[in-house]
Length: 165
Image (cartoon, rainbow, N blue to C red; front, side, top):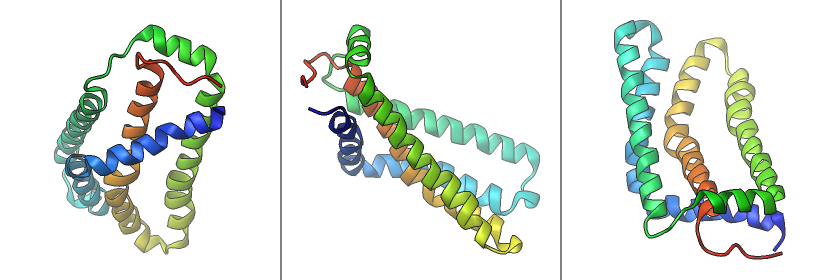
């Protein structure tokens, strides 16, 4: 198996996982979506204390989301640190490909969507565009990235044999 194909197993797995558990993932992600929509779009109208408290709530929801993803993704699996070390030593090119794929996603969805596309809007519309973009990105791009990272750890640390070249 090529290292690139091995790297692609994780986003494919993440896509299937996301679709199987979309209600939980989207539901928990909507906490951040709504918060970002309100705080970013109406920055001046939201008191500082409320904005800070809402950030704490978002962080708590994200922690719950990652824990839920982790528990669902590793249910019935036995993960071992030794397996992750062996995987990293043997399949480091696959891990580099993972980094390239994740970096490409960041370029497209962070730099491209926020900076480039956002820059096309008149100054008066940019804040609203960013608020809506963040509303959409939280249950999609950001949540999928959490699933992807858990999938990457799962792929490396699971205690079954890794396919050989």
